[in-house]
Length: 378
Image 1 (tube, rainbow, N blue to C red):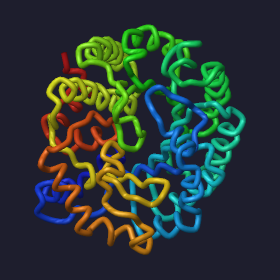
Image 2: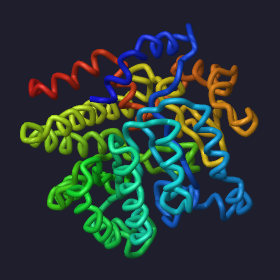
Image 3: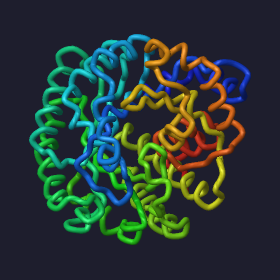
Image 4: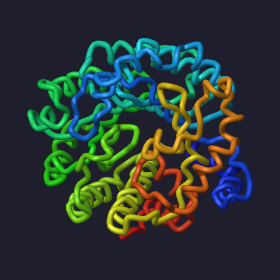
């Protein structure tokens, strides 16, 4: 509910900005790809190839000092999403979270992981939780190990032998922490691609036996950020719809026995799943997109993007070139040009992170969320 309270005063400004009438004000959601280093060799993502082709770029990633300057210039962000590469391979991840809490004052910090470096991830999560408990007890931390299949099939999709076993090890180590830290939420997440779309029911049933705090999925997309724009990774609309219809039915059945927070989360996800189906079928923006208004994405090299789908193909600018001044870049002409491109509906994608903000800004979709929470959806 905190997200709704944060967004409510900004909704009118965001709407006028989406129409091109005024500047957007501060985004409410920031995703920061802290590094492009990754041990995975995923079929759905080619980030891992970048430093093989351009090894020098690894040393061009933002320093902690640069990150502090950027965060200091930004102001309050409610949702702070950490991304990668593999975020836990960044040696300063705990420092980044601490700086985010100091300058961005988020209500939620979310970090996904491939779970390959089990000991490293566990140690870092424990360190972040101890820090939050002492200094920022109201900040909620969510960690999401990725689970794209069961057993060797997961390893095949992720390109690393033994990855599935490590996901299970990490999950078993982190799950008890939910009872110790009330602000910790452990999830599991599946990227639905052409390699697992026919097995979603089996994967979901397996995840149910693990009893995670929540289970989410998103569709494999061709994104500039992932250098996979020429790869056929996305399932067909028909295959995705068959898979997600099962998933939507399962979540609807458990909603009546869930907590209020879980019901709100699941209701948003159910509306997102239908939205993703419609976008895939129609290949257009089904509802207006607020990328570059409600949400921003910071690359490892200081670029600001409206979203990772457009990524560096339509960058709003680089913060190193702007003296690390986010506000100057955010309200500059290049940023306005990217917003105009999106406003003219010249792009369309089912990006999950952005879709949740779009749903909040679209009254018919938000009504469906409220209706689902109340148990009236059919």
